[in-house]
Image (cartoon, rainbow, N blue to C red; front, side, top):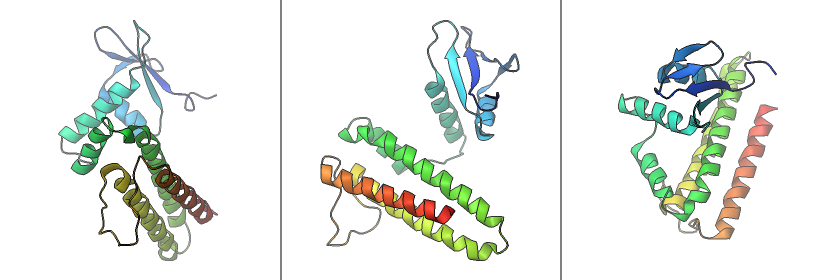
Length: 187
C-alpha cells in the first residue's frame, strides 16, 4: 500500500501542536485542510492517550471556514443537524449525509468525465437529470427530518416520517433507484 493510499497520520502533542509523521514537521489546521482538499485521508491521534481526534479537528476546520465567511452549510441545514442530535432522526442522519455526499461525488466525477468528451453541451444534459434526482432526494429526506417540504406539497403526496418504517423503506428504495440511474449514466 502506497503512502497516498493510507491515511496521513498526524499526532497531537500535549502542547496541542500537530505533527505530520510522514514529513516529520509540525502542521496547522489549514495544512490539514489542504491535505484533505488534495484527496488525502487524514487521521489525527493524541500522542499521550492514543484517542482518535480526527472528528474533533475536522469539525474545527469546518467551523473556522464558516466563521471566516466561507459559508457552505446553509443555516437551515445547520439547524436540522442540531435538531437531529435530539430526535430519533439521529439514526438516519449519518447514513443520509454519507449517501448524499456519495451521490454528489459521483455526479461531479461523471460531469468531469463528460466534459472531457467531444460534445460537452450534449453531455451536460445528463447533469440536469442528476441534479433533478438529487433535489428530489434532498426534498424527500428533508420532509422526514423537519416535517416540511422544500417545495409545496401535492395533495396526493404522502409525508415521510422518521418513525414510520414504510416511509424509511420508501426512501431507501428511492436511494437505490437514484444510485442505479447514476450507474447507468456512468456507462
